[in-house]
Structure formats: C-alpha cells, structure tokens
Length: 176
Image 1 (spheres, one colour):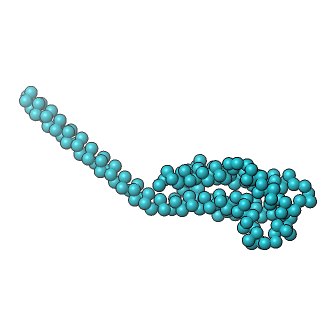
Image 2 (cartoon, rainbow, N blue to C red):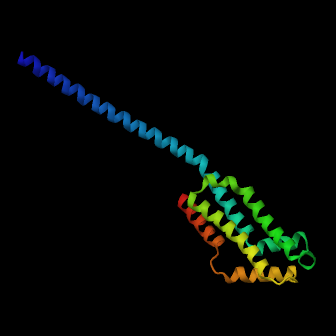
Image 3 (cartoon, helix red, strand yellow):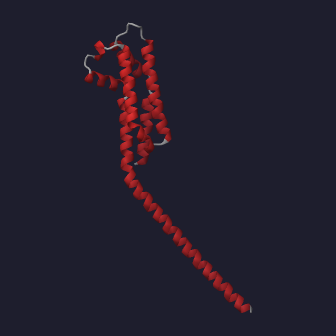
C-alpha cells in the first residue's frame, strides 16, 4: 500500500512539474504575442503621433503674435494702417481660436501634461492680446497696438507658448 502511495505521489509530482512547464511556456508565448501586437500597433501609431506633434508645434508657432501679425500683413497689406485696435485684436483672437479648434483632435496623441500646457498657452495668449489692447489710449492706432504687442511679447522672456513648445519637443524626442 505504501508503494502505491509513493507511486501516486511521484506521478502527481511529475504531472505538476509538467503542468508548471507548460503553463510557463504558455505565459511566455502570451507575453511574446502581446509584445508583437504592441510593436505592430506602435508601427502604425508612431507616424500619426509624429504628425500630431508637428501639427501642435505648428499651432504654437502660428499663434505667436509676430506670426499672426505677419500673416495679417500678407492678407491685408493696409490693415495696420486702416484697421482699428479692436479689429486687429479681434483678428488675433479669431486666429488663435481657429488654429486651436483646427488642431484640437491632436490631443489624443500627446500626454495630458503637454495638452494642458498648450491650452494654457492659448488662454494666456488670448489674455495677453486683450490686456495689451486695454493698456493703450483710446486714440491708439492699429500700428501702435501691433508694435506694443510685439515689444511686450518679446520682452516677456520665456512665454507659455515657448514653454509648451519646449515640452512638446521633449515629449516627441522621448517617443523616438
């Protein structure tokens, strides 16, 4: 009887050992499959993410006051000579909003931190555009507004737009 129990115990140990080996192999194969799926997914998503980083960098560059004012001059060469401060301000705010709205879907490809910095840059820039207009005398010209805006923006040092752009670039580099 003892011999039969020993044989049964030995068979149970062998079966358990065999099961552990099979289970381990199964887990390794599953991990390998998951890794391959993730790698294939990244191959497909990486170019899309890179384009999103590029588009968001372009958004930040296009909404800098110097770029928006140069764009205004190319579209409406006489704008700064004939428009009011309110018209230029409205143009700048509309440009910021349109650029942001056009690229809003890109948020799914960047971290929440970077997206929050981009939103903050947009909000701070809009506040800045409004504040500079509010500091001017009532009879100020559009040219005076543009000049004051540019001077104030450049003298601000590292702007929220610059900070967001730096963070965006750093995240893009991490991805590569």
